[in-house]
Length: 158
Image 1 (cartoon, rainbow, N blue to C red):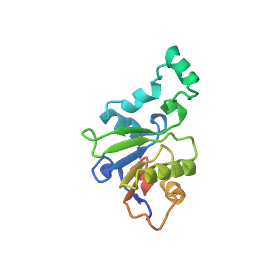
Image 2: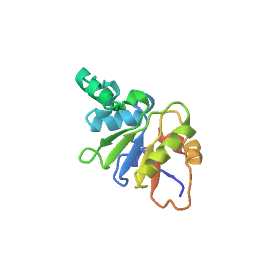
Image 3: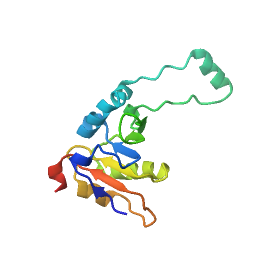
Image 4: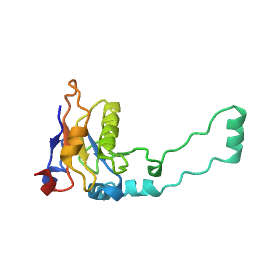
């Protein structure tokens, strides 16, 4: 199935269980959506995980276990935010964008597949082309879920 374009007027309406956005620095949509989420995305971007106490580190070393690393938005790991009650979607996933739309599309596709292919709406990063994203989206014949793409502006979707 090929992703279909959704214009700005329908972008924040119900219809998809998962929304994928880029990081706030590269997406006006993320900044807008984050407002509805109580700025959870921006808070996560500056969050510094607590240091593991020395006692626990020594126990982990003694047991030959590696300490768990907590991913942050700075580490380019995706961030999933529960969105029910704040937005008309179940979850919003922030996938950092690093100026390579094809690579970003593949990351989004992988996350979507790991979530068992729910109805999906992807909000494109600023200054990207929806046609380039759609052509980079790995298409597979067995995919039947709805996939919607929201470009940066209504002018770009024309």
